[in-house]
Length: 406
Image 1 (cartoon, rainbow, N blue to C red):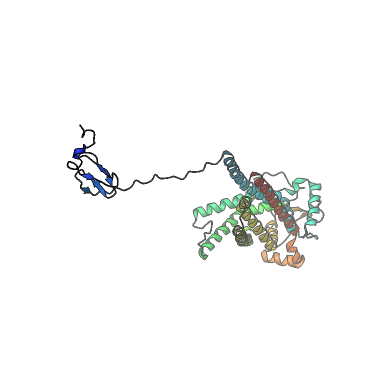
Image 2: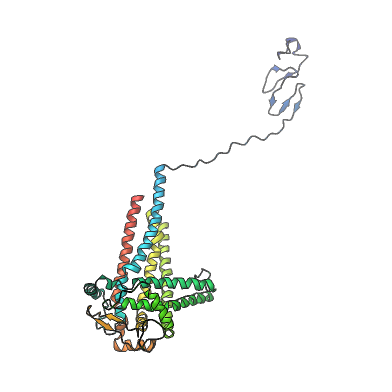
């Protein structure tokens, strides 16, 4: 009964069972058949034999996962509001720029073109001060419509230009955009596409020019599609009768394409150059010191707007003499009656007799001088001053909204 309890009697300690002493049970005797302890060097059996303990890999520690911090509801709401404000700001800034270019600056475009085609004028309006005086006289004698005439036709010309470019590039291998891996052949094909686009839009541009310079005193209430009707009629030779001094469209292709291509090349080069300078300046400021989120958001939108503004301004200033020649060639023989830009309350007919582009340049230089190519240049100054002011006001409003949201 003593073995059943697992304790050996005193008489059998020296004979029946061996004495097992080890680090785990010093001075204790174990009976046969019982579970023996394991030592660090193996397993000891009941007969005193030592067997090697099987190698067992220790269990891997449980994988610890990094806990993702859950933002507080206030921080999440602030982040969503900032993202919505960012999207709204991008749309609003672009819309403000387009509104200024095509709507707010349209009176400047009207006066600029009227001064360019008025070969009778004694006042060249090279400064914005005289232009403001003429604007006031036109608005007083003819009403506000005198400064906003032909605005719908300018949108039609832009739509025709974009549509023609898309259709031609779709059915021809001419590239619509130039990638970074450009070559002379690719540039030539791209400029050919632009040239074909200007040729397609040329009759509609001529009709739009007539609408913007025609005096409101004798002007009929025409619809917005009158520009399309006049453009198609100019191509097929129908519509309003013109005089014999009207130049054919074939003789207008070269000056029109030349002006369009030069304007596109100059504006593209200046835009890339200004954008590169602004991005490098923003990058250096980021490296020099930590930039606030407000400044980062401003740097995401305004560099392109400033680059487009500088490109358009430089190209218009450089090509202003060529634009004067182009407008006089388009308006000749169309029996257009314009406002008197010297007084602001009379009308004058257009009776030029230019034989072509070279004759027009020589005649202007001989009869009106070199400054005759810059008639109405004060309207350009007002136009881009107004554009820069709107961009600055938009930037201030956007900065204020960002400061309140951060």
